[in-house]
Image (spheres, rainbow, N blue to C red):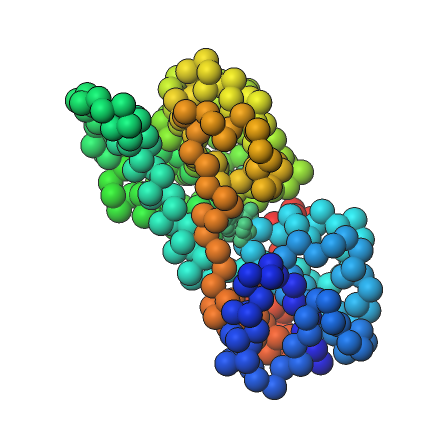
Length: 309
Ligand code: NAP
Ligand code: GLV
């Protein structure tokens, strides 16, 4: 039994160390040196090149290094019948919660404007409301969106969430489905996207959606670039329909030189690092799942391949 893994070069050593510490006997194969293909039963991957996973004929599970699995389902040759397991890992959730709280507070307290004033040596009294009178809305109430929504309620923001199926979270006004979307948007001043990228959610952050928000609302997208129509975001900013946006993800990554978002005064950019999977926690989850599979049990956090998340 062997596990093959593929991550970015900068973090490969940390993953290797985590496996050595936690499962020293594991036959760990690097992507570029797969050895005997027939031995490979597990793959732990981020953005594998299309068509390669299907060449591992004895694969029992595909583990995603990230929470998102769109990088796997975009492979038209993804082997059928092999369970795909997404990453659910406490430090990944914690990192995203920190990111969302940071940027919600920045938008809420108009921090970007105050930083611009500092650069201009301008002393302008900007008054901001307190959290209970600020309406925040989280699209996606899963592992990450749910934790972010709860952290925002702890700060006493007026929080709502939107998901595909009905949900209940203490202190969060929950909306769901197409039916609940307009009411959710109409009350949302700071909109956060933590949806998975699927056929249903591709391009969801568009002009039509922005028009349903109160004028001057702001947007934080820490999910996927494929959710956003970047021209519509820029147009909404220029019209004042959106007051500002924080974008961690883009349709093209790295964001190319000269892209209008780089220099837009009301766009904050982070380089798809809202939250990174912690190798130690992730390896723990992978080992638990390998043990489950060996006992004949299904792995936990298996993805619904029809829904795509
Ligand atoms: P998750 O646990 O699978 O939760 C997804 C949530 O989205 C669920 O509440 C789901 O509704 C909802 N949803 C899915 N399709 C929907 C639709 N068509 N309409 C309305 N709601 C829909 O996912 P997660 O672990 O929270 O991760 C979310 C995403 O964050 C990932 O897919 C990834 O793309 C992104 N991410 C980004 C970073 C970063 O650094 N930028 C890091 C980690 C993850 P139900 O509850 O009804 O199923
Ligand atoms: C990162 O983008 C992830 O999906 O975990």
